Length: 146
Length: 176
Image 1 (cartoon, each protein chain N blue to C red):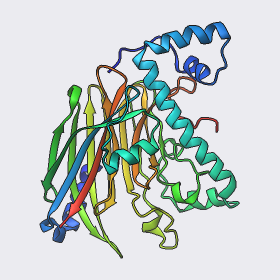
Image 2 (cartoon, helix red, strand yellow; image 1 turned 60 degrees about the horizontal axis):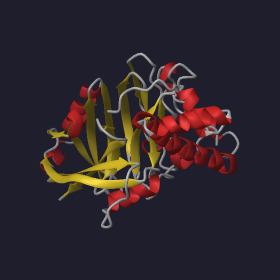
Image 3 (cartoon, rainbow over the protein chains, first blue to last red; image 1 turned 90 degrees about the horizontal axis):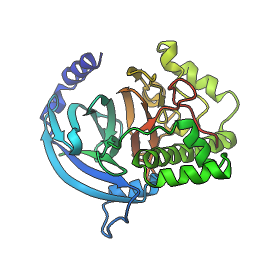
């Protein structure tokens, strides 16, 4: 069903395929050990105000350029993999939204989600637990259209 | 991933709520200090309780009579086992962004389709500016479920939480 939806969106929004789409992906570790470093990103500040973990730190931050219909893989610590696909771009009344599919796999567990978010908006996705220690991974995913 | 732990979710929940005898509390406290798995489960549980507690309070004060029936009537009807996971008692702004996706204890699959009301009725634009529209969530896990909620700054968070032991693996809201 998800594949069907993806095809429909990709075909139905063909005009958006040429739109330059950059996905900012920040890998954040949330833990109950230690304190967060002083300089924090907007995403980490938001997470810190939302979740009750004691410390947050950015493990990596990168940008992936995608066309609609394309996907990219992000290899995370402890064998987790995030597959991010751009399914479409929609013009709404006041702004543009990007439809993404994010699938995170770690061992026997997987989280597969499809959502639309406004241009520049961030969605935080739980990305598995670390093999050692009491920390979890969070992806902060923000699409940007040119 | 921390090694699995023998302490059940129920025990941990009673520990968190200080419902154990003082001897058991002390024993479990000592265990938790050295158990990464229990620490993670407690942290998850604290997040879940806080969020759902806030939702209950907000729902209690802000939900107009008959709201839940109205929301459910507007939703496309998924199979009963799936719709059971959508909590209609939530306030309008979060009704479709807080979805508990129940996952059975034995490596099961749960799918929730939560189309935004915004697409169906332009009068219901009560979501925040940053909030994402969730089309589907699918979880494969022996003991974890997904929940969707709003961050402090109005962004959307898709989070994995432990399924509780008491109800056969179905994630349920904690008491406020």
